[in-house]
Length: 232
Image (tube, rainbow, N blue to C red; front, side, top):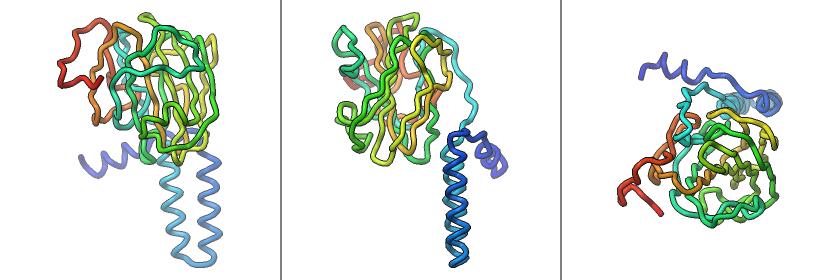
């Protein structure tokens, strides 16, 4: 990859939600820089990181109701069966859950894994444990939406992390979301879980890197993955 390509990839739109934080970082850099010039350059570097954190790149989204795409950038940390959040009141027991963990350098804009109508949107306060831990699914602050898709109810859960202190979800009950449509944002470092009903088979494995809006997490009606690729 050329230097020009790297610069071009980095120069992407920044979410408006990040403007106040970028301004604060820059003002702090100016104030500290008045004490020592070295502080200014450190602060300027942190300001650049803050702008990078709130970047919102365009993605090429597969438009296929048989494919569930990743709602987040990051590393797939779990592929297996788990219970959806209890506050959603969903029946049917455990479902296929795929978790994607975002670090502080990941894009934190979240996208709808499938097209459909939002039937539930619930925020639940909680702790701020390391989002990479499995118990974070139960204990951490989270915001969940249920999407009525062409192939059943799909759940997308934004989970706060050790550093994250704010979950933004713009999805409202009754709203229709397109596949890959932006619906939320988490600050700073966190996780998103996707729960899929019966009939869906995973197309990713633990440790794989995913891109929001592009990486296919699961397929409906396709052949099951071989045992070596399934982490149930």
